[in-house]
Image (cartoon, rainbow, N blue to C red; front, side, top):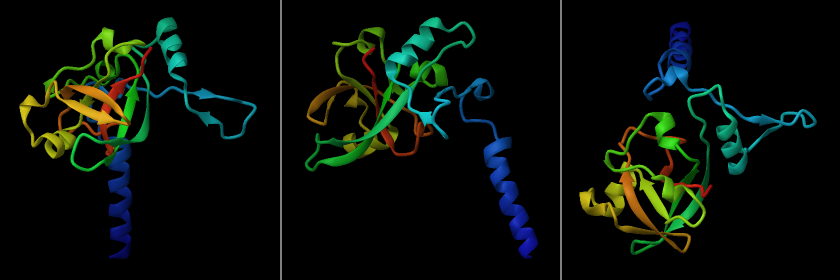
Length: 174
């Protein structure tokens, strides 16, 4: 019984990690790229947004390149402040993943530049918690770290990237 249990656990892990396709259209075409400093042992550093933009501009191999980083923020639109996780995303983030918001839209080029309007796409979970799943949430304002962000889209409940805790995505000004 112990051997069967261990075998089942190992197969479940291999199935989830290696065999099951990613939950994105053409997930088998997605790759992760990064930068490595050979002078530093085990150096996996974050890639600056400006570097991602450079790689994207000079790219001749991939269909598109995008990036993201996450941070914990205070969302203060409700009666009480709430800790939430925001993903700052580079140009074309949702297009690369092949996912469209369930309601509203993704970011437009004017919003992905320095000085562009502060906008956010929110998770299905935040939409249900903060706006009681009201479709009129599009165009409403969220206060995040003292700034007002207009909600332009709501992601499908199945989109849990870059991790399950992310409840809003905003464009990194390019």
